[in-house]
Length: 385
Ligand code: NZQ
Ligand code: ZN
Image (cartoon, helix red, strand yellow):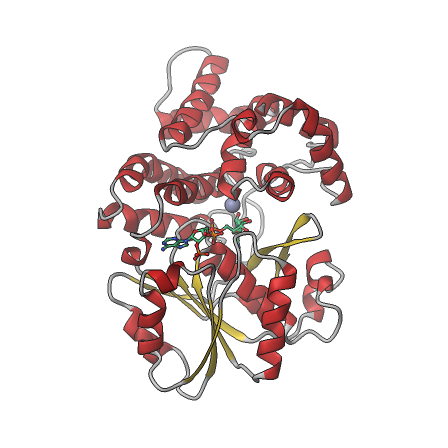
């Protein structure tokens, strides 16, 4: 197991009817900016409940944070935070709203050009302050509610940033707030959670036994409850399990001391930026292809995955691996998500564009051993067609 440091300061408030506790959790004298997306929280009454719970605090709203949140939108919110002297940000939404809010929290307190936060010019040490933030989760998927990262769209790319300053102070996880999600977004949540887990698990053996067993527990839980929670939104326990899996797949726990890959995510970001494909759907397309192309390096962990997640113990090594990949693909397809690039209107003649974008963004040595060069990425994209 590698050395690691693990610190996660986010308080999780989980369960039904917990919104009223906002009154306890948000400082009484805070001037609060409530941030949300395209309107689902208005349509389904969540925003009203949030406002009610916050009582007579000074509240301002900022709506319109789009999926794959854009820098230009977020900078408008930064002006509001500065102009109105906001001291608490409350994100009410999915990963896009939560990530956008984290960026706003940093950008509002950053002295330089806020693009530096995305390009990495602003090193974590230079980001010395952020506005306090918290979240109310309406879409279980990204884990943003309990981590220190975000992904922002800007100038044709998606940029990842991290800062310990943007761990939410608390996150309210009420599974009933997600009952209004369309089935395709629930399927996205199952798949995003699945891929976050395997990006930190199907790598190289590293004797992280707790991490491996926990990852396998998340994956088996998703396989058990995934179809049920897509088919029946009001099955509380299935949704509650999805929600808690999503949070734990990307809050640092299973990745601590373990090798990590993230190839699927980095290529996936380019597919979203270029073709507008939902984040999770890019992952469903790419993950089987990554495993097929990187089979030799990942052989030991793919065999462990086949055994402990899919109970595949018979036949040759190659057969077990191929069957595990096929079952994974069938699981995603069974949730209603296509696993072939062609289904999203992307043909072989666009692969050059994707490889060029990877190069422009410096994604030229991905994977747990930095073995995924541009040439390997090209093979993965060809395999995904
Ligand atoms: O905008 P509104 O009207 O709210 O509608 C949203 C949006 O259209 C809708 N929605 C959310 N909650 C709902 C609801 N509709 C009905 N009922 C509800 N309860 O769902 C749509 C998608 O929302 P979005 O927030 O974009 O989805 P998701 O949570 O999947 O977030 C995706 C974003 O997170 C980033 C992705 O790159 C992408 O930008 N990621 C962030 C990560 C992180 N911070 O750690 C890691 C992930 O790998 C991921 O990259
Ligand atoms: Zn993801």
